[in-house]
Image (tube, rainbow, N blue to C red; front, side, top):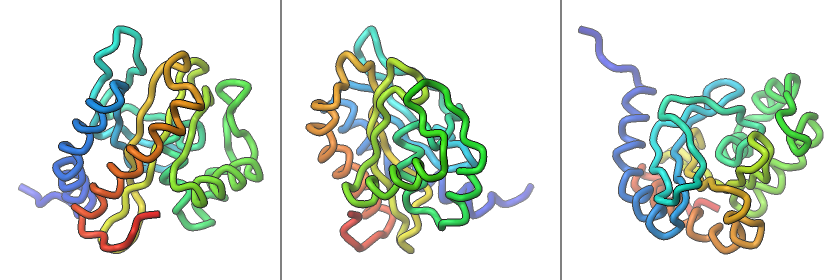
Length: 186
């Protein structure tokens, strides 16, 4: 039997540490809550809690989404080295008319994420699904995961996103502290 890789161990620790905070965020927002990690140009959902509402954003644990087109991906990308962003920025696909499809546009968006502390998706992957997300930092200040909230654009309006942003950033900060991060997170 082989020992699990360091990455596998970190992801298990991340899921364990995040669970309580995901549950609290789901209760407070009543929308779908995700935990994801970066995998090349995509994010992989490693945990989620579905909204109790009949109409809600859906995803699968283990499912992928294009990092540049979802809030949870942009929250992670904003804190990656420039060569990672440039590599991903060479092959951006548009999924809706709102999808960022240029490196310049992506860099501008990621700059905004860094300054406000959270990322937003306004129908960039699935036209009727909006979302927001904040980065999760490891003890060594590396961002390889994020926590996010997604929902139908009829409920998760830009105004509602602004109201939920602090809750999402607080959840990300709490998870980061649980992983040993000692900074402020923002």
